[in-house]
Image 1: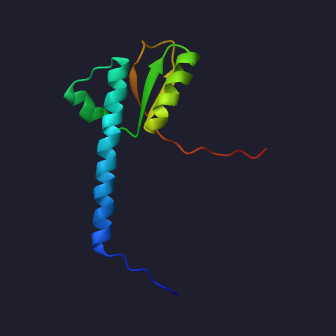
Image 2 (image 1 turned 90 degrees about the vertical axis):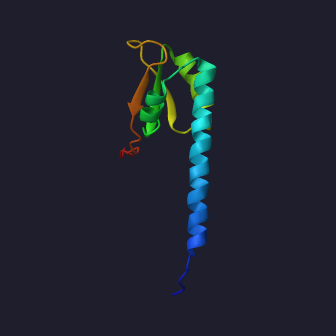
Amino acid sequence: MAKIIVLPSYLDALVALDVEIADLNEQKIRLLFELLGIELTDADWEKMLVWELIMITVLDKQMAVQLNKLSAYVPRLKFVVRTDCILFTLLQGDKKRRVWKER
């Protein structure tokens, strides 16, 4: 059986790329929030950026569909319809795996 030895320099390069990707994703979230007119304090940003999923409420399905097309660029964002919340309420979501039910 062959064994692959990964040098630490490659692992360091992968970690550095992950950091850059995280920074770019944060910039995408900030840009999308700016587009929507959502302003947050620095403390709110720090709290929100550790969430696995950021759910943003909208008032109707048409708006959710339109905005979810934009959120395709940011996998941690999801727009959900909630008529009991004001427009653009930020909620913490979780990324549960889908379970396939047998039919």
